[in-house]
Amino acid sequence: MSHATQQPGNLAGKGAVVTGGSRGIGRAIVQRLAADGATVVFNFARSTNQAAEVEKVVREAGGRAHAVQIDLATPGAVDELMTCADQHLDGFDILVNNATLNHAPTAIADTSDEQYDALMAVNAKSTFLTMRHAARSMRDNGRIINISSLSTTRHHAKGALYAASKGAIEQLTKVAAIELGGRGITVNAVCPAATDTELLRQNTSETDLEQLVKLTPLGRLGQPSDIADVVALLAGHDGRWITSQIIHATGGLFC
Image 1 (cartoon, helix red, strand yellow):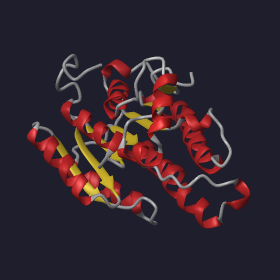
Image 2: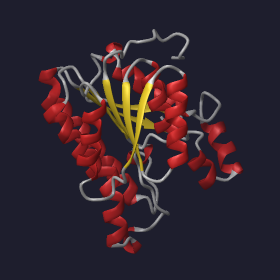
Image 3: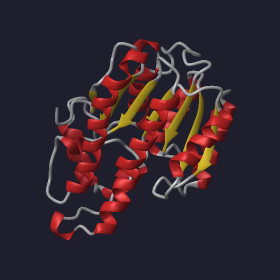
Image 4: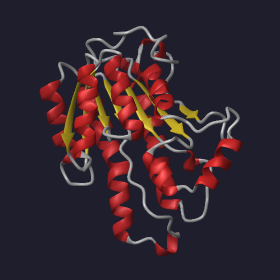
């Protein structure tokens, strides 16, 4: 679904919170939701210049986005983010949990308590806390969209901690869909595959990237906008009958 075919303004009057919105997939999601008419509040931990650039791009396109520097690994961070959201939004309708912390592949036997606590704080705990806030204050017929990972189904050695954190997100998705369905709130997760971001290129050799392209039925790497388009579908009116789903947006890779 391209921006050209999407009716503009279908999220007009909606308030959205996106975690980890300064770069990569998160940036594309912020820009897409804003282009569709939502007012978006997003957090970032360190990428100050990139966050400012997102705000500028959205503003120049006629949209509204507000960046907040908050590290979700710190105690009280989610409460601080939601307080800022309350100040900028007229209502809370859309939550996208995109913020993710990764770490070097590490065997279970070699994983430290500190690694576990840091990764789970961002990937699992902050997702739980934002969803708890949404369960309490999101308007009826809202949307919760969690970004998961193929690591929950494509297991490999030294990937247990990351997979476990994303597995927790998927279980939260399933249960919240049951609890919040009576209010018309949908809850889904999106699992990207190899997506052409700065982070992917920093951690993947050109040879491995070429192999991923060959393995993908659609014949290319995913783009952040590909994932943002799926999120936009779920966030809008056309996604009203989709809930409790773990959607693989992968171009067919590993499916």
